[in-house]
Length: 214
Image (cartoon, rainbow, N blue to C red; front, side, top):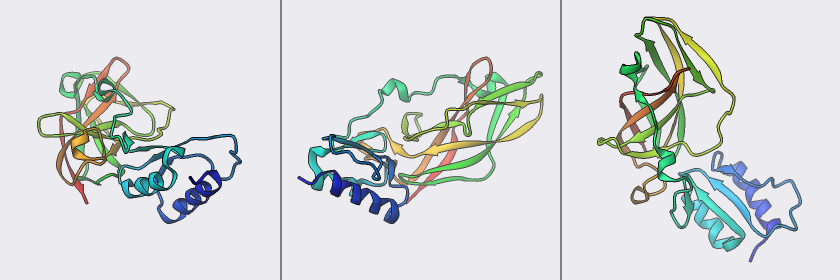
């Protein structure tokens, strides 16, 4: 069974030949002679790469593709952790609109701009890191996809005056959380629900149209 010296070479090659495939991986520039198992997280589109690594390294690698283990297809997070809590945006006096048609490639992620409008009679403060979080849902509102990867932990407040709007970035991910769909949300027309946090509560946008492309 191939070990670290071989794996580190493959990781360096993947970084050059398949940008974005590696999400979390051991630093190939370090010595790891004492380790016997290496955790690697791959993007949701990188199932072929995962298959190649598993065939070559077997139990030496602990693989995750998107939001699920590979090849087992088990969710890394619990189902409850994938639900977005919050009150409807209209009940909180907030409107969320897409600035342009939303689109993202299957198994990939994207940053898109939304317009958030404050319909309340008082200033509202959006608490956010770089981006708002979101989930992809089916037409019935069931969560089918999300972003799976590291996120900016810092937070800042974005004030929105009454009857005013401001642009806000949203992070859209298409790592599947439904085993029957595979590791990536397949191409098609889906819905996007955005999670906002004010100083008082969590708020959920109404479903926005989103196209997942091949």
